[in-house]
Image 1 (spheres, one colour):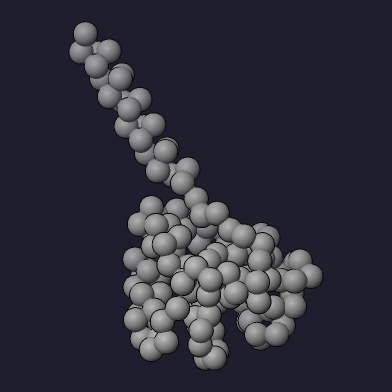
Image 2: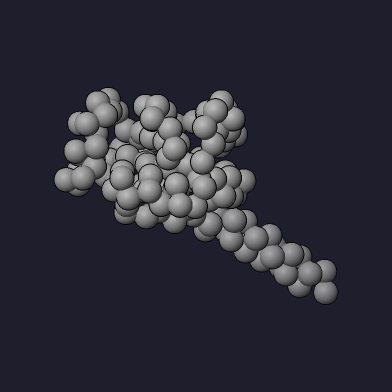
Length: 144
């Protein structure tokens, strides 16, 4: 009897942990202008994630930071999200236009502001990234 309870408890914990780990961000394939326009329509900010296949830092950002359920909720509530690889024609053009020096790069734009986008390079922990994005949102006088 005790063994069966233990087994059931074990499977419940494993399934709960794996269900949290399976949550992921849904990205669109918008261009910069399409994404900014969509963000303006929805009263959100725009975030473009530029990554590179085989990049260890991109893998770390994807595998740890962007799996955090609180960060996922924050991002989906406040941003229109899109992602491009620097190996694609569009991703390469964006990287060149904005002089992106490395990946991963997160570019954040307020759709009703003429300010240059905020560019965040490298890997941050989920809480640190959320705080940096919250500060950007709060500091921008023109809210979408």
